Image: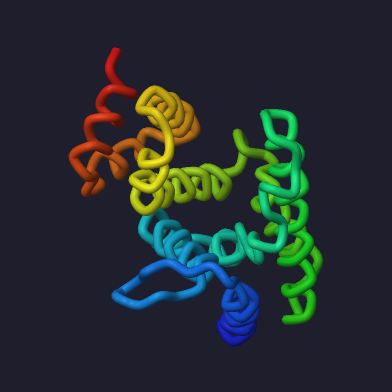
Length: 195
């Protein structure tokens, strides 16, 4: 790995995400939401794979880059609108990341590999994609699940946990079960996993 180039790319991703007008409370201060999310996802990737490839580390840092620029509300309500949004959003993230990586001097092979992870291609055959999926799920469960359950009925939360669980590896499951869930969140997770 060219450490200087890698740091330039991470800084470019972070600068882009610093423009997020939405904020999250992180370490006692309000910070740009997507910057915090990128840091959290990167941390999960490194925790799951301390020797993660450069490609995977780059993909984690830009997985949801500039997400606020393409809001869900810009697409029709319902499942069809949701799927359209998710497809267009993934392409937007991949294209934005590819442009920044090219500006940082990355070769096309690396850019293409990061794009494949951003677009969730080769999910079954790529070890990097499996780690990314675990990291995405764990980040959701650790940092977003309580917010989710505050908005939706318990049955919907149970269904989401079941779908999330299916995406994860057995190792991911072990990490998930060790998360410091709130009492409500833990009850819903246990309900979702009951036979």
